[in-house]
Length: 178
Image (tube, rainbow, N blue to C red):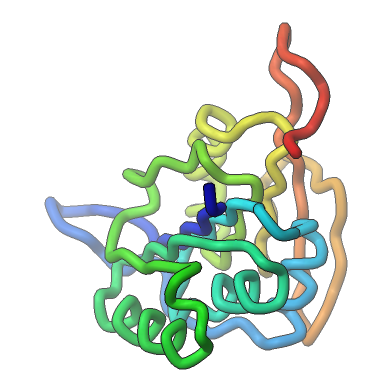
């Protein structure tokens, strides 16, 4: 089975999707650091929240052998990301959907990447803990997760990148997946 990546923009308000996370592309050196800190490897399932133009997923597929699903609320960005994946030759490894990250099933992820906003990260935290298996890596460009202390924090291209690992739940094995 091929791994999957997912990317999403945030939330639904007033009965319909609202683009409450503005689109800003991630610099190449930040993408590389996010994939390195996420320990993305062949066979991984990567979920990228706020995929935008899909560059993180495309790099994960092309450079690291992962596959993925990108999710964003903006259908124009989804079309651009799909076109970029075709151009990069990884359209068979990644797919993109217009969807709300808070309604996306994250349970298949080995790695979750995101470039959202602090309040969105905090709102997302319970979903990450509820849906992700122990050992899943969570990587955020620019914004932390409040009082959840990152396992690693590094800088590239003028940006800070944070990495957390979902802890083992009481009564579950402590071994990380794969």
